[in-house]
Length: 498
Ligand SMILES: Nc1ncnc2c1ncn2[C@@H]1O[C@H](COP(=O)(O)OP(=O)(O)OP(=O)(O)O)[C@@H](O)[C@H]1O
Ligand SMILES: [Mg+2]
Image (tube, rainbow, N blue to C red; front, side, top):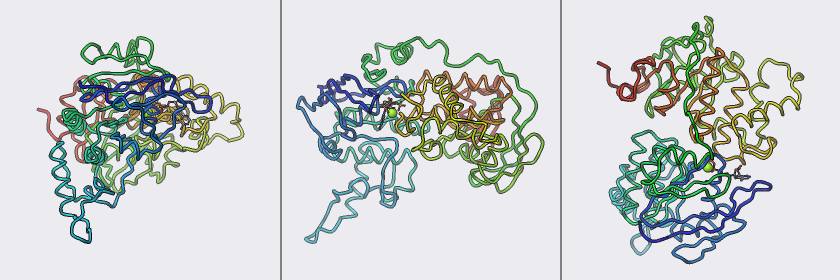
């Protein structure tokens, strides 16, 4: 660890009546990875947005190399060597990777100052090999996966002589292999003397990548610890302010009769998927990125059409052509991309929660506003959705709290089949445990769950059976008693069990 490159002192920030940050201090050294941890709504993203000048602070000072700075625009922050990589990237889709990296600073040649395309590509290649990225700079941004886009953004930051790299939940949409690559790149930047701030809700990753860990709770500093001197348990206790006894609930549900049957379901991206789902069963669906597991979810919910095969619900063939029809037949879906599919950003938390139950067959006049209120308040308390008022717009909630709102919407509908895609992505440990408990309860009351997730521990602990997909096709079904990480990965990578 080198010297202090950044200090944020006594930072405060309010949004109307919400105190998002209350006298927060942060110190960052060169050649270190500092992980920022805290429950959903603790103030992590807000702190970083203040650093990058995306938000104005109400109080406090920021120093770089011991000198106070006042950024008015994000551009100024970048010029001082700070790059913030958000989860939602704003690349220009039709540019090539190289163009995106050297945007506004293209190398030129000749008296006419023509852009030197060849050099740009060469420079990009040299940069990529320096930090260990394997992407062809001639590809267009829109062709890249989320992981590749992130890598490109990071490369861009390095090309701009960035000294402080800030990443807000960069790994939540990445596969295991991609996370490893990202960590490789972060490690190189660190060895080149850069300083990194890293936010994640995945504790295993935090324990791997961090040098120090800083915890925020309710907008206040809780403490900073060195990685070698702490444990996951201690960090969790710091985060939630209490000891978390059990992450996963005791299994009490029983699997009943068959409810849903898929036979050779085929759509763009998946082929011949056949399975049965029983009442009170939690069926896991596992696969690596690109395996088709997300596609299976959207097909089962009527968002994408299947071109061949059959689906039967309660013994009757179903052929819904839209999510509305799926909902009417008791099928609910919590999407993995909540920003795109999940929330109605301008509506209140309350409206977002009661939305799905409103579209059910219940006559609308039976539901009055006080009833909506009660429902929304119930979920707010249950999942600890952090908002001063359920009438607030959902877009003002922290990422994790938006996710909790979407989940409560579907649980409130009480569907027959609940499809959950990456339900705990971006969710803090305390609320995770709560969501697992809700899943267990829901199954115990006879509900059926399809759990689509790339989190291995989650799927192993929660599922009765696990369907493994590889390259759009089924590559095995594991029952709970015989499933383990090794077998899951082997099947997901296309291997066969002996
Ligand atoms: N633009 C905004 N308007 C109003 N309130 C906001 C706004 N941005 C953040 N907040 C509030 O500030 C608090 C901190 O939010 P922040 O997004 O920093 O949390 P976080 O620690 O990043 O959480 P998560 O883990 O869920 O991403 C929350 O209570 C949130 O509702
Ligand atoms: Mg956040």
